[in-house]
Structures are given as structure tokens and as C-alpha cells.
Picture (tube, rainbow over the protein chains, first blue to last red):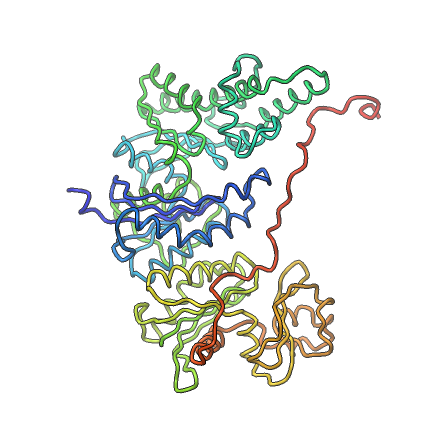
Length: 346
Length: 229
């Protein structure tokens, strides 16, 4: 079957600070448009929910227009609508879900409220084709740090481990503040780290070798804060590149080690890394090295698809439609802490 | 003209289908529910149901009128996001109506009064009216005690919540919430009169709560005498 026979899926994402609208047929990406409010949050050092929600409402219709134009289709051509139902910020989720319901109602097309985290895995199919079954997925972003065992994107996703405190991206933001680097902290730390020596300081690896697939980054952030304060107190010069490199090494070391361990323990030969932090150059490099050594095929979507977008929600919607799952009803509720095992909400 | 009206700027989730009937307005169907925490769940099914009861399909609609608040923001945006998306998908006009104007209209009063809704944080959104159809000045947000009521009757949920401050009987506050039937009437009458309606954009009246962070908290133990105390 050629992709033109497959249903045209509209995907809508509004769980955090990105308003995303994407169009997908099967594994084919037709269009992906994102409006970000990140610049409005920068001076606050983190996402301000009310600022994000206001921006979603402003951006939704223009972003939809750009997505339809990009794909050369009309809204009436859409066969089904997928929307992020959770997890995410309550007020932000509600803008996307309200719009999606209205499109479904006006067009008389089925609505699917889907899981944002599983969308981050599904998006890889738009770049690398159908996901091998089973696959382990490492999701790392400003809001999430999770290891998943994915036997089927639509019907069988299990949580192997999660952060017990900060998300990895959150740790990057907090450490960037300590080092007087801008928000969001991932890109500037990645850049600074290239000039630094990752072995200059040995920062702690949270939950290293504890036999779980859980993560902890709060102690690492505190260790960096102590290091910075100690250098201020003693008057010794602080090497931002060395601190950035050593911090980054501690993060990616534990992320990649646990991901590879999870693959081995479950006899899985495929690893997907996705989420905003998957754009990190050191994470990609170390994951490639360790996967190659362990005989694991690594798949990392291009950075543009790793961050929040509507195409990932459309990609998951396509899977859910193909699996023949029942659509959501119009009383679909958002769920700020939707568990990852629940691919379809409500 | 077949107009779909709805409002989610107060604890009421309300939808109606209306049309001109000569110089008046006929309400084909209307429904309301009061649940401050479930706007997102109730609105779309509510719209589907009033359309069905009005024996209309979405494609029959020619106009949308949505309450633009002011009101608690999360609920308010449910109505606006829904209105924008419906208008977009159906290719029809979308207008705003101030939520207090709908409450004022439903009061049927022909002498001056104030309409007030709950703005949370011990404040009200309020406006002064010469009669049910005529707002005098802009809508504001203030503490109840700072509203210059000047002995005028105050209606709306804000009047019920702060009846003691306004010095009136709590039962005198009706109507408490907007009805989409009244909101639709306001919209149809203004459109028939060739009057302007507001853009379908939210009236927030407050900036988002957000504070620029100070310096990071220190994590090292405080050294020196204080630490030993």
C-alpha cells in the first residue's frame, strides 16, 4: 500500500511551551510546524505555565495554517485528529485538547487523545521507518527522564525507570544558572563543555549501579552548586568549560549506561533516544560508542523532531488508528500525569 | 443567520443555538452546567448536544459568538480555543461578547446597576451598566471594597460572594452566571443592528504571575560563628 492510501492524521501538541501542529500519513512526515514561547520564559529561568497557555491560544490557528499550507492539504482532507492529552501542564494541555475537539466536532472526524511521551518515541518512525519490536526508548527532556520498553507503540509500552527528582533537562537549566549561562541550559552547556575536560572534576552519578532504571539529578546539581560556591569562597578561578564538561559527563554517563543495561536485561537490540536533551552532542556520541560496543542499534531522530512538536503526536495517532483502537469521546479529559503505559487517554 | 454561542469564563459551561426572528431572537436550543473544574470536558459535548436539539449540524452554522471574559483563565481559554477552531474548520465568522454583558443582558434591568463576577484572589471583575443593554466604561478588576458601587444594585456571582461588602442581600445577585442564550441574544441583536462586536480574544486584565528569580540559593553550610550557634 502506498502512503497516499493511508489516513491523513493531524497531530496537535501543547503540553509545555511549544505549540505544534503536524500532518502525517503512516511513517511519512508531510508537515511539522512549531511556535515556541521559550523566549518569553527565558528571563524567568523556566517555563511559566500561564505565559505558555496564553501563547498556545495565540499560536494555535496560525500554526495550523502553516502546517496545512506546508502539506498542501485542506483541513477537510484530514481523516483523524490526534492530540496530546498528557502528561504536561494543565492549562497548556487544555488549549490543544479544546482545539482538537472542535476540529473533530466540526469535521465529524475521530479524535484520539494520546500520550506525549509515547509520541517522542513514535516520531522516530518518521525518520527511520517502522520501529523494530521490541525497542527500548530513553526519553530525556526538560520535563521527563524515562526508560521505556516498547513492544508496540499503540498497545504495549512499559515504564522501566524514571527520574526520582529532577529531569535531566531541568538539571541542565539549573546548572546553567549556576554558571551564568543562558536559559535553556542544554545548548550553552553543550558548547562550553567542548572546551572543557570532563575528567577535571568527578561529580556524583545519581543511582549509579543501584539495580534500578531510575535516575536522580538533584544531588548532581547540588554538587555543582557546592563546587561553584567553594571556588568563590577560596578565590580560585572557576573553569566554566571544565564544570560544564564534568557535569555533562555525569549526566550522559548514567543515562547511556542505564539505557544499555536495560537493552541487555530485556534482550533488546534497539535503542531510541528522544526528547529535547537527545539533541545533546555528548549524549549522542557516548550512546553511539556504548551501543556499538554492546551490539545495539541506536536510533536518534534529528534534533528538530526530538523536541516537542505536532508531528510526533500525528505519528502516534497514525499508529493508534492503524491498530484499530477506539477513538476518544468528546468529554476526553486532560491528564497532567498520564502514565506512559497509557498510550491512549480516557 | 444561525449562531452558536457559548461561554466558559465562569463556573458555568453554557451553549446555545440562536437565530433572528424578525427583530427579536429565537433560541433554538440552550444548555448550561455549573462545574468550575470541568470546562474542558463539558463544552464540546454540550455544543454537540445543543446542535442536535436545535436540529442543526455544524455545517449549518453561520456565526459563532464566544464569551471573552474576563474570567479565570484556564476555563476562559477552553471557550476561546474551541471558538477559534470551530470557526476555522467551518469557515465562518467568530465574534466575542464580554461575559459581563451577557449577565447584564439577562438581568433585564432598565436602571443603572453593576455586574460583578469572581476574579479569585479576593477580587471581582466588574462593570457599570446604565441598563441591561448599555455598559458604561470598561471592565475592571478590583477588591470588592474598592468597587465604587455608590449604592447601585450589584448582580452576578461576585455580588453573591461579597454580598456583605456590597451591603445587599445575597439573593439579590441573580443572575449569577452568564447563559449562552443571553450571550447569543446580545450577539444576534448587535449583528442585526450592524454594531461592532469585540474580537474573539480573551480579556485577561492581569499579567501572568511570574517572578524573575534571584541568585541561586546557597547549598554549602554557612561557615563562621553563625553555624555553631
